[in-house]
Image (cartoon, rainbow, N blue to C red):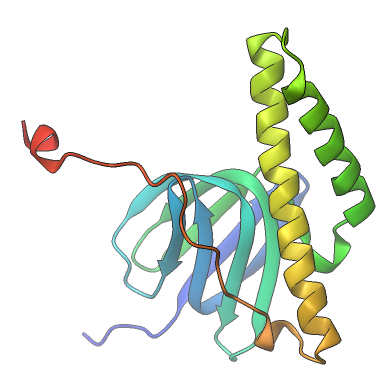
Length: 171
């Protein structure tokens, strides 16, 4: 049986259904890095971090959403994303994000911060920095006259990549 060239993608957040439709490709911000999904992808269940969800729809159009973490389930013909929260890149409030970054950095700079407050501030800092980066890429592209289809997909080099000893995993 020939393989389909599309898969069904459903994105849901706490407010309800955000996106549903057929897609050729989706790039998803997973916990350990970005995952590219094509039709027939191996089944997978993983956590998501804050970042951009880029969808190439069946009609060739590109949709971009910002996800604030969640879960990703991949089945051969359907991909489901349960997002903690989501918004369109153009709806990001850059001033609010920059203020939250300042507050998180202030909390992290304090010497006597309870562990939970430190962890919360660290997560907030990562999320808001991801929002600002996504917003700036979108704005840079909009100034060049492009839309989502010519959005700047370049990623910074991977940092803090975990080193895995494969021999230890085999035991």
